[in-house]
Length: 134
Image (cartoon, rainbow, N blue to C red; front, side, top):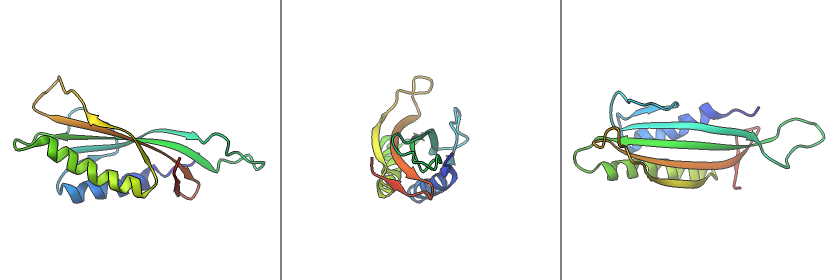
């Protein structure tokens, strides 16, 4: 299995922290972040890319999906804070040839004082960690 999750997380976490110094950033879903803003960057899928197997029978390409959750408890403008953080990560994902398949707010009925946005990205990666546009 091709596995560059740690590298992608590290790169995206740096973008999040540049946009929001002091943010809590995790590579796992967090139901109750210890501080805000909070960002989770999770690889939700890693499957062999269809039609890429050759006679060596080794995996050369995989299709990956990442989900980014951003939470803000800002009293000023939580929506703007979430959009700024996701915007920074989005720019880096696009640089890596990832395609954004969804981006929008999520109803946070459990605690409406916390604003939440989610973005999902998909792309094809080779064994060396290079992404190719789908």
